[in-house]
Image (cartoon, rainbow, N blue to C red; front, side, top):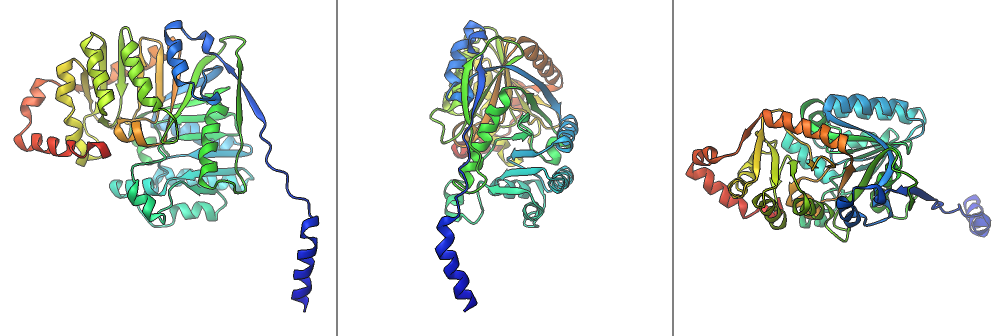
Length: 427
């Protein structure tokens, strides 16, 4: 009887309880600095201004991080100093020494009252853990949720049909936003490889570029559980920049839901329009037909085109397909450098002492056509010259690809290259 009374009361008075107000979509104004970019690069900036959040912004400050330990020190310090909110979208959060330290620190911040949100990619983490020999199915990520972190899964393993039919569509971005004031993005994950082992490149940003980057994180966060409690709504509204004070930065997403392949188009535009040089770093060199053609044509017209690739990759099984592109590139004049260990995981380019790209996009077909990625384009001569010096250090510690290497290849090596080239569209 008591149960029926409670149920009746609930039905009668449910409509009298006022509904919670919907989240407010408050516009965020950012300074569009397109007019302050060098005239020869303004068409490039317009090409990539695919939304209000992807226009070039002025008034930014940043630090380019090229050492994993420096990234770990800065990131952990910012985690400790966070006052209310930490938001993350990572391809990998490793169940290893550095990942465990980060998880425990974040859980302690939750206990301090800081809200921690993390977009997880189950498929990517599961198979990368197998390749790298890290533990799987041991509750590392479940432990996050149980201890107060808000975790949304971009690709739950139980979605078997989607996982099997489209395994290449990964959430490959690396975005960390702290208190809506500090943001990190680039090539580094929270893993022992990124923090303690590899050469990589990451940006720590403050200024108007932070809400632009956060808006991309929010789109992924909302897409994982669309319409559920806790979605984040952002409306980026560009306004004319009053000056070029600070650094000019452009945040540009890429992915299957973006109308254009922005990373591919940016690389091709730079190759077609650079006057002096363009140098790339990538851990995986499997260019698609359009990018390969642009690399070769740029070198053939006399542009100094160079690509730094690891001498020893982290996925040995795919080394033959990477090497299968070497000869056609070198014969066209593209200079390929095989960087000695540690492993190079950077995804960057520098062009004509002015334009810099730092992001998550590899020079491979998965990144260019299927993965969700984000790149940062910087229009600044001092930054370009600093990154150029990093490249020059890499060149001095590299083996240049030449005919001597080609002559050393055995018949078995050449056969493996041709065989793996057949499956390159899926790599």
